[in-house]
Image 1 (cartoon, one colour):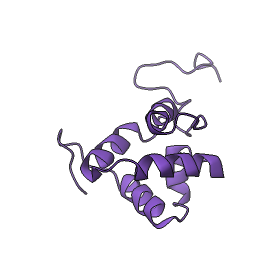
Image 2 (cartoon, helix red, strand yellow):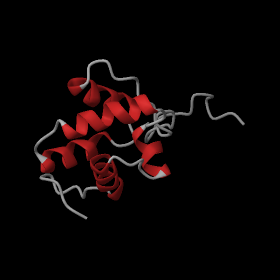
Image 3 (cartoon, one colour):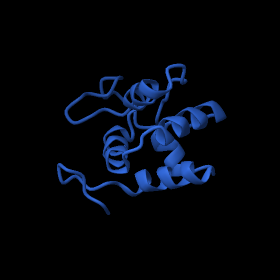
Image 4 (spheres, helix red, strand yellow):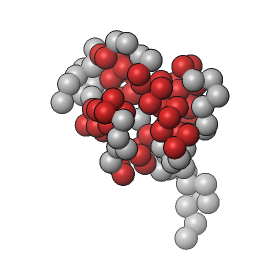
Length: 107
């Protein structure tokens, strides 16, 4: 695993995404889920954004920071592709840290 400037390791799915988009092939299912790629429009938008980022080290760091967050992915892609669709990941509805579940924890 490659490390970022803040010593946070670059996650394997980041490498998988960059390689797949560069080769113009669909990434693995896990990569699709964690980056919110649900349709060909999502794929095209994130591919265009990735290919428009010339600094590979910066690209890896940025993708590592946004992985798993639909709102962050959407914002990052729209900086490069303004008409990109909204990205939603499987992680978006999970509570973080001390947050209580939306149903108050009732079973």
